[in-house]
Image 1 (tube, rainbow, N blue to C red):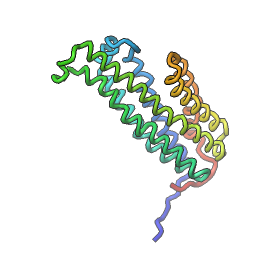
Image 2 (cartoon, helix red, strand yellow):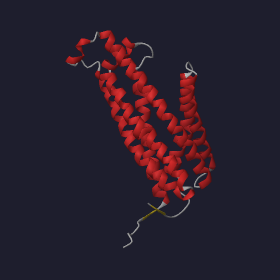
Image 3 (cartoon, rainbow, N blue to C red):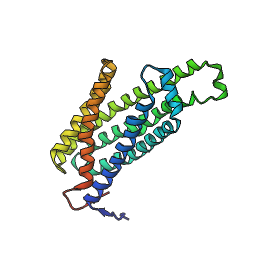
Image 4 (cartoon, rainbow, N blue to C red):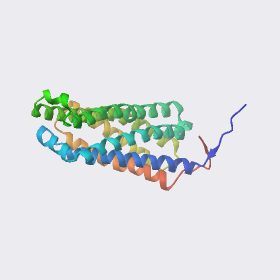
Length: 237
């Protein structure tokens, strides 16, 4: 017997996707853009460790908000696939799969490095075999490893954004500016990932490029989803 399908307005689908996507941006932005920049001092293990201990509560919140963002991002990946599959099913599937790999998979596992950066400073009895300076160095190593894990995830996310931008331009569900802006953001993510690994020393500049392009592309895209909705009347999940 054929199951009954419950139609949802495109406007409702757009807004749900936009709200969840905006939550992902806010939560991940808080964790990556505020928490880690507050506690991490590149190359200074002693100061980084002191800040992690001083802001231990904030440090834990950074992990929790990132995890929440990655869980929501898994939902956003499915919603974007549902929204865009009529305009290229295979392309939409590949795009969403790359997004699932980027943050819900790689990003979530990478949070273990964030956790361990604080745990090695916890004073657990079995860690007493290490000197304080060694534990501080380990903590900074885990923070550096987490940053590099974020860059690896960014490679997958960058290709996702490229495909998402192409789908948005093809679909004409919204002004093409948003699709082009997402394309530019995807190129920026890829530039940061490969640039940091191939040309170290330009991390701050590349981070600014990503931040600006993501603010224009991703934030603009989510706000459009929330405010304007879709052009068509009905959409089936």
